[in-house]
Length: 211
Length: 407
Image (cartoon, rainbow over all chains, first blue to last red; front, top):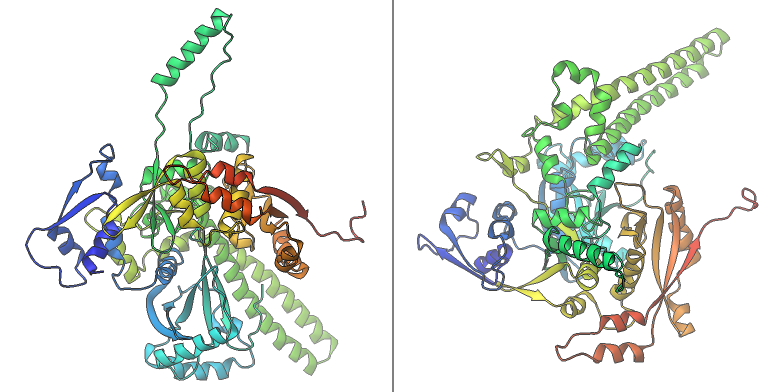
């Protein structure tokens, strides 16, 4: 499917929707800025069957679609990303494509907000905290002091094995080019009512959190 | 409390998004009953708002979207259907974001500066439920940090105690500890007071993501949120109430789905014990008995049932949907272990709800296939016949401690 038809699918609700390119320029660039898109496109709507619809209301909000990146990514990781960024207020969310057990999937990489409660200091063993810090400095390196979390979007019906998780840790290390495997990843489980439940998966033993 | 209840009843008057009219009883030999009947019929025809259908769009990944704001409101306020994708339940993300980014003053901050300091308690009431949760979490975090500090100090004090065992020192140390504890308590309560301010101050830092959101011209935030329905909800609204139009994307066009098409899209496999059918049977059962049924994923069960709805009260019961076959060997194969059930029960007990195991009697394949294959001229499945094959049995599961409750 071409990017254009994808765009049309994303935004139309009508039986017939014709998009005219007013300036007669081809839609070659995949990422058009918001203003460009608005100027270039004129929407011509013909709706023989649902004439009583109030067009203004039923037209899906074009702007909302435009904010989302047009990158091809799975529905699942898109849902998790949206939840992280706009509900839980994480920032710098990016998709990291990884190959686990011969199938492609996405892991999200994002920065938690500053008040993220379970930072490394209270989840890791106190005795080893100095050691851990030293390790982290080398692993984070160029990214600066900020600590990225890795989120693996999964469906409620997915069956996750230890091998799968192990591969995930390994693949993140490889595709992110970091010295060691991440301390932990977060499973983001997507339910059919759009609730997303997050769970930590630690690579090894972790000190339990104090309540 | 009663005032609040009355307010809620006004806000959410209908248990379902349909209009119901009650006509007076008609006695053919009584002329007065004819008159009153005619009058109420006249009222029904003229004054009543016509039943409007909401639009549901099914997109890739079986996501059921309701994008129109009025549709969202209709489905939420009449029976609490769906969930805002960026909210806990009611779609309030747009409003919350406006306040968070400082584009709109929260109702709580409308009063001028003088009042603001005095009326903190009132302020808290006006915050959205998500914000209140945030406040509580902040409080808890601050408290934790304080506690950590104190504990470290305590460890040091104990070390000192070990070194100097003279009684006078000991007393001093204990006294110091007590002082610290008092200080801590004061600090925590102080911080509670400044928390609301802090939330306000957070606004100043805009993430790049937030800048993208803001529509500077219109002084507004782009609406990203829509209401998402569970597949069982959509099917209930479509099949039982007939109050939604369900569309599906077909390349450029949108196709209006019939109830049968929606059903075939929702099931994973056309078998008698399909998870969707089982869940729907349970959903329908409790909805038709007047309960408000919502997803129970946060407590590790299939559904939560509310007496009237989330704003009125907490859910009382958690449902776990289980199949019950005619064939006993199959039952043995799918039955859950008690360790699993008691684990879930502990979680549910922790939030003061009771767990109900809902067994769905699964019809035999033969019966099931007969109904599925016996379609009418429009290729539609007779769902009434289909769902009559199913039966629901409930078992309440609760922990009994012989030493505690002996009656």
